[in-house]
Length: 118
Length: 107
Image 1 (cartoon, chains in turn red, purple):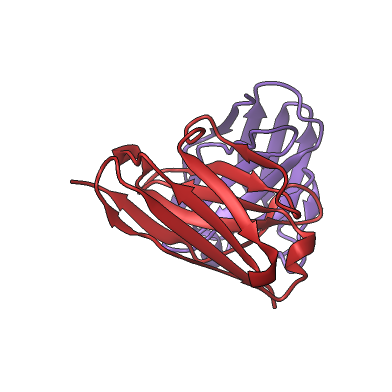
Image 2 (cartoon, rainbow over the protein chains, first blue to last red; image 1 turned 60 degrees about the vertical axis):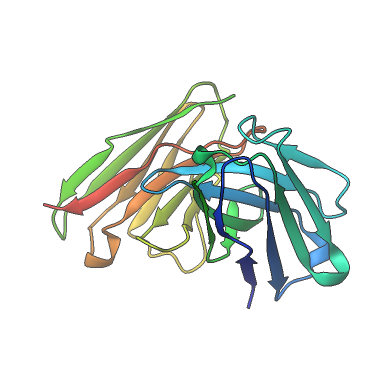
């Protein structure tokens, strides 16, 4: 069974930093790219970042470019999202997600809540 | 960026109703479209991929159609478990974007 488990969320002040983790199991982690998708309270879904299976390619949404950095450690079956210069509008549930046959999100974690507030 | 627009934003329906949700892309995305169902407090679940393909385990009352810029998700006979929010998502080119969502509520 494929599992993705996020952690690292919490309350942080505007301008602060946080690092999210996503630990995967149930599949050959090093063969798959991973994404982060977020959802602000009561709002829709927003894709924010992608990392390739070997970690050499990353993409970001404009809303987080220059502030967030995605990385992975295939030896630990883990993907990370380093979030700096956090703003109020970064408040959201952050999900890690694995592609299906194509670039749609087939497998999702349970999400971790990030709250940016003073 | 490709913009995805869903309609309606909210849909009131009864069990047994045929429900149709529309998703429009701001430019052609061929058939690179997925549909998701999300219930409160839960992660989304993929229903349809590549516009018309039903994901494994998804009931056959769900179907998808369309290509280019116009797509539909149809629930042929709404069941109690189907009251949820539905999203479309394109995967033609980065950045992937979602529609704003359609909430299917009890009439």
